[in-house]
Length: 259
Image (cartoon, rainbow, N blue to C red):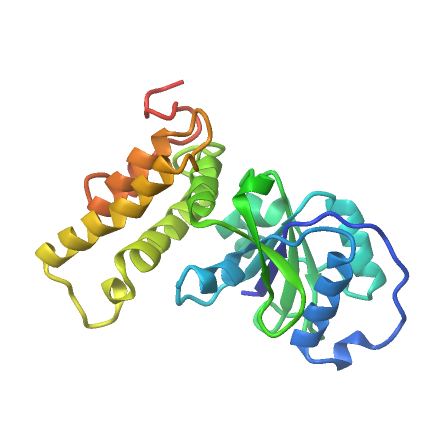
């Protein structure tokens, strides 16, 4: 499967010097692309870029969300980064998260196993606002990225869950993302370490400790009006009182009843 780097931005078209861009290291290609985009808009991290900040050890695509998809895609095409196409078997595993975006190849390789891409995603999916975002430098560069604060990361996932039915590829991916965030970001990295099992009493203790910062987000007014239910939902997940599969989805209200 292609490794994908995703972005949330808006941009203007600009002229790019013609060169064999694929003669450059992949990291440099991505850096140049992001630098060009950052001249015109905010870059908002998601995917693997966000995973590193949230202490998730998985290897996956690095995502950023964008507002003006067509303009941004044309800009990357002008940089001689062509649109890439993935097999339906790959697209079906993530559904809208690939179908509604645009993949631009940043490697010379074109096969799914060797290809890496910059993946442009529609900004409205997680529904972030300016208040949700904090500026931070991209590792090893002077490029400023915008990182959603922890409460916004969880709220964005729960918000997206409400856009999809209970049994679909998009919902499965969101549930998996939320599960990893809860385990690694809230409960501690040892929870899923190979060959290491925590005693039930220790997990209960970690769950109660993890619930406190979630309650703190509520006391600080970080939940939007009408989304206060997210606090109880997350507390239930981290304490083990609720299952991720029971969270609200398309066709239900926030309290879980049928709309």
